[in-house]
Image (cartoon, rainbow, N blue to C red; front, side):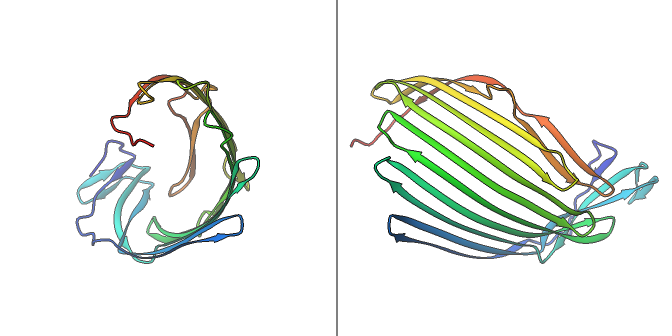
Amino acid sequence: FHDSNPLYVSRGNPGLKQAHSLEVAVVGNNIVSGGTVEYSSSFSYMINDIVSTRTYYASETVIDGYTLPAGATFSTYDNYTGGMRWNNNIRYSALVQPLRYKIDLSASYFFSKSPSFVNGRFENYISHMPSLIIGARSNFSAYYKLDFTLSGNMDMTESQYYGPMNYSRLSASVFSDNRINDWLFVKAGYKHLSRIPMGERGVRLDTDMLNASAGVYLMDSKLCIALVFRDILNNTPSINTSAYSNYLETVTAGNMNRYALLSIRYLFNSSEK
């Protein structure tokens, strides 16, 4: 028994069977007028998948000689066959002249079915995750590059017991790589992320991330010394929504937040052009 938290006790299961999966994948690409199309599709089916089971006890309960206090949740593991994942991706890329921009368009769809055992009740979590990404990458010169990405996706998860728990995510990012001369460079990147609940459940989260760095290349660019600034706006909370036996919990927590570090990199081997 693992009881560092007496209200959330877990135990292993030595009788678990070996988990297996059956997988099939298709990958390909075609050169079309003005660009390239890449596509992939993969499917996996789980056999004896190891899943967690949870039971909530409103009153004091004894399990195999161990006493659980009232209000405790007990979890262990079991095997389940029938979980599946299906992932599909397609991407189109092309070079736009005379702007010297490379355009990337990609779309994907992910489906999964995963089991859940709560208070002896079995149910499946069904997830659908479509997404669309539009990106542009410049190559104006060896000294100036600019990247832009706009993406959107939806996470539509439905439980037989809790009902739908759906979110949409929208993000936009821009990254600039400026080399002042042969040895001095400045880089900066900005990203905005919106996590929007679709329905009454959940909370909205908006995050703005700004990073920057400046440094020098020495010894024929083999040695790079840079000062890197992360999360300049001090705005990178993480958020997680979990379903328990008798309630839904949304936790928002901070990460490392704003910080700076000194980066030193040395390239021991390089190929000559």
